[in-house]
Amino acid sequence: MFQKNRENNENQPETIIGKSVKVEGDFIGQGDVVVEGVVNGKLITDKSLVVGQEAKIMADVKAESAVIAGEILGNVKVAKQLELKSTSKINGDIETQLISVETGAIINGKCCMIRKNNSAKEVREV
Amino acid sequence: MYCYIYDTFLKEKKFNRTKINIENRLTDLGLNGKIIQLTILNNATELLKEALHEDIKTIVAVGDDQLATKIINVIADQRNLTLGIIPVGENQKIGDILGIPKGLAACETLSSRIVKTINLGKINEDYFLNHLVLPFNNIDINFDEKFCVKSAGENQILEISNLHHDFEKPFLEAAIHEESSKYFFDLFSKSQFSLFKIKKAVISSHSIPVTIDDQKVIKTPALIEVVPKKLNVIVGKNRKFGDD
Image (cartoon, rainbow over the protein chains, first blue to last red):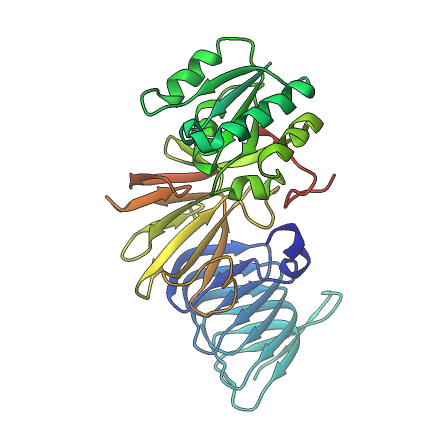
């Protein structure tokens, strides 16, 4: 379970917030995060974030990359790529380098694209 | 000098041959030392404390996980002591993770003396090597003084593990899952499962029973934290963590 599974575990998320759990406060992680439950506060990770279809985040979110299928009530800042699934609902501003939006996704806020070298920001309102 | 603590159940006749074989092998390897046989009448903690006044550097638990965790709580705060294990009997998860074979073969592991300094978990005044388990319904728990986690389901348990897949790093793994599922075998397979890496947890609710290493039960409130590099332990080549 330990060393033998280490290769498998290297790809597993560091944090999982399951459906049956509610997190309140400032969550700051350093690995991949999966949210299936409720988060109320702040959610920051320097790796990837996956928000499940039934998840609800009432917080500002910051991640290196993100795949969102649930609801976020707050601003979303993603350093690299943001993918919004058809069931996603963002009530807040988005700031990211690359964005992919599936048909059906809802965005109520500004969308700001960051250039690679961060020397200038090109603001495109959606 | 070595001190061997024999578990209570080793007094049974069926273990006589095992004890003789182990003692002979230890003598052959030059590892003979003081032997303390625990009984229902004597107290392991008191006997160990007496033994520590002598020039003993290695305490060896000859028995099961329950004895190992009892000894850990006595020697964890002592400097320059090393724990060894000769697994005999059932309940040998600790020996398995440390790579120590059962019975006579464990003597070779003792002789090779590969010593690692491992992390321990601590809950109030008790140390734990493996894990804590408590019911996770209607309790207030704060992780790392930063965020609270509350239950939104039923029949859940919280398991805080010191022995996890990244054992050499100083953190505890807090897993919340349904009471009927087994953490290690259902890992990541159900959406009701939650997992956090933490260094500290505070349970402020009162009178929640917490089972420590599957033996001792205490009641909350409790402060739980990881204690890095706390215990020297003799390990085997097939241990489930770390590289040589």
